[in-house]
Image: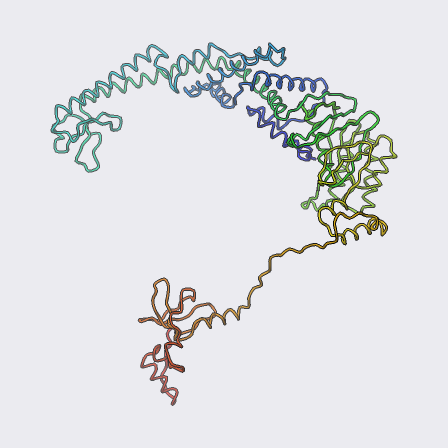
Length: 634
């Protein structure tokens, strides 16, 4: 039974998780379940209240996601060297820890118990200062060590000497140069020398132009400095690694303290996420009791707009353990029972509730049967699934449970469903559980009136607007208003008379006050079914589209031809072109001039389509027997 999904607590968790920063807090929120320890639950509620108060007075706490720093600590614990980027991330977390500690310290002035968690945070200032002094802008700073600074100065001087040598060579051998400036090729400073002057310049060819007319030569004087530069860069790299390994070792020594800080940040993130949710929902801290009493004053559904939702008043406990709620289908019964249970679950998870005031008892389980449980994969009908779920609920329900059931006994024969509904209520009453049930059966209302520990309740309904008011009146039974709602929504009087007569007899029809004059259901225009046409008639239509002798135009070439065979069943016809006959789909052919306008009636088209030899053979065959044959072109 997925209680979170059935009463929409899963959606509340989604909203709650979005307010958390760290991955750990988000996972803990998704796995949150009810607390069964009164002492622990009251502490959870106090934490939520303290977090809400601190956010109200000091603003949002400076928390940040720490998943990346966790990975960095795993790297350093393996003995690997951290990169400058990773060290900067460590520095950023240390800054965030200091800001969070300062934020909490300011809360002490309000005597907020959550503020004293600052004592569990250590910003490790010596580590922060060490990283800041050596790492800057994603790299190791030149002032990180005296040796590194000297090496980098020597590198700059060496590069300047190389450039000066190259410029001097260009000036000295100006006539040999293809251009007046040096260039960098494959890491070497080169001068552009014309191919024909190659032997005049001492040095190594590093590259050449695409045409091959220009050679890029590293002069011998420059090459000497290049070798020196490579040695300096190796020394620089070694010194940088020495500094990074030193810093990594310092981070490793501080890893236990850092891990403790991260654990505390995650816990504080979880607590402050509850405070943020309380602020967003305009919620309040409930009073927690173990006396099987629930009192909600102006309760709202947490997922509904508080400007639109109508506050609900609810009370159960003392001598009443069960409430049977009745009223019209659009009266808000389901929303009401969900609102009550959802607020109770939120309270028992340490969250504030969307009520003006609330006194909520602890429950060992929350059980419900809401909605259509039809399961096609298990071949269960709506009623079968409903009863299966109800039996599961009854097997778990005891004196510390809270149960809600919607549309009790529905989905089957009304008489039998009513009997099953009463049997379920009786079993719940014996279990001692607190329960809320919704139904339309009048017999169930009568049963609740005469049974100890159970009372009726109704949801009020505005008959003018056909909207629920979401007000629950405990102690009174409601009516379904089905005929009234159907009447107002446009059901014709004739249909209503049949319904009333079937339900209450002829006398009820005469006494019913119809809301509008006689009328009928207006039929709307509906789409028409298009039947498949007869294929033979379609072929006949195509055959009649072109006649032998028609002058036609063939697309896309726009050639003119004469039809020599009409369209066949495949939609293809044969056309005589000046030099050949072709088969072509009728969609590529357009009538140019009809045969009736080109030729007289009974015209012999063999004059056009057959050769003289073929016509002579056909003429002989018509007059006498002959051994000649006529070959028909394909």
